[in-house]
Length: 184
Image 1 (spheres, rainbow, N blue to C red):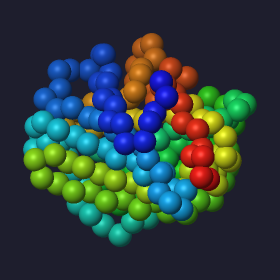
Image 2 (image 1 turned 60 degrees about the vertical axis):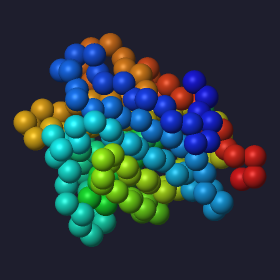
Image 3 (image 1 turned 90 degrees about the vertical axis):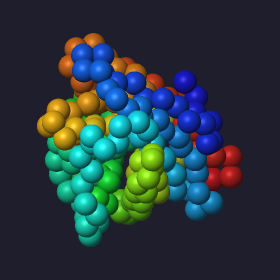
């Protein structure tokens, strides 16, 4: 699927999960400086979700163990990149040479700007520099979310899911196509 600027797309809960009392959607646009503007929106029973308290933004591992929103991007070749964005402002960036084979050290990147707004809907906007890391090329993209419930259960959301357990690294999850903007 090709993503168009400002088009909201529903993420799908993993089919092995329990019924969920909320929905998650996302959209991607571009800022005038080339950064990606990714919006994530959670609607429904957002009071049953664990939302970490804001703190000083920093790079941190293990964000996927709690409520976290993610971006995966694959260009030509077998490698790909992953970004994790936590509602508390923390973030992570990783590079993989191939399926789950990390490159060390992780890519140098500018910290994303994460802005969470809570109301009847939880809305989070992320401004992130993707092109300097991936290069200006068409990308296969996976947009995903891990949502931690107050019960301790976690729900896994993606544009598409592969077979078996939740795995955002699976090729099936790279379901959207995004090309560099014409003015880039």
